[in-house]
Amino acid sequence: MTLDFSQVFPYWQVLLQGLGLTLAFTLSCALLGSLAGFVVSLLRMSPVAPLRWVMTLYVEFFRGTPLLIQLFWVFFCFPVVFHLNIAPWLCVTISLVLYMAAITSETFRGSLKSIAGEQHDACVALSLTPAAKIVYVIFPQALLRAIPTLLSNVISLFKESALISSVGVADLMFVGQNISNSTARPVEFLTAVAVIYFVVAFPLTRLVGVVESRLLRRYAL
Image (cartoon, rainbow, N blue to C red):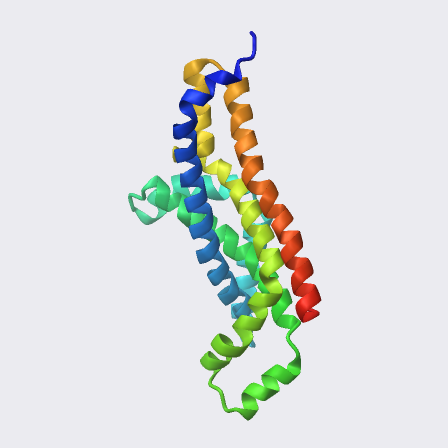
């Protein structure tokens, strides 16, 4: 078989639509998962031991099992266990948010530990409520310290999101596989899909390095 990458160009709009769905899932789940991860990191530092153990078990389970297994479990087992008819897009969202929350909780836990004790003492001196302390003092500093790692997590989630094609969601990978099957041109279309993933992910990896160096230089974190 002779390679002919010109076969890809008539399908570029369909591939971009798949990319758009991939990016939508990545960004929305990254945002929700990061916020949930911050809450989990606070709960893991709770003085209540059983709560710490439960959160630690959750984090270690989702960090220690493949995302594909988590995705399949939500897709196939949630309807059976909870007697609910869950749409594929919702299964994907639940899986990615739970996974993202687990990995970002470790990022936030590290940044929370790096906040100086004087900051906590100042909150006590100002008589701030626990909620005000978290929202106005702790969260901004933890987020600033966590930005480079959070961006790396988002890039990892973007690449891992190719797995959602396995449950029938029409993301970039799903579209590329379908077109390659229908045209009998797997080399051309799967190569095109790989190139698209690379074109999106590579500049973001460079951006992480730039952001990290500037934060370190400006704030001496």
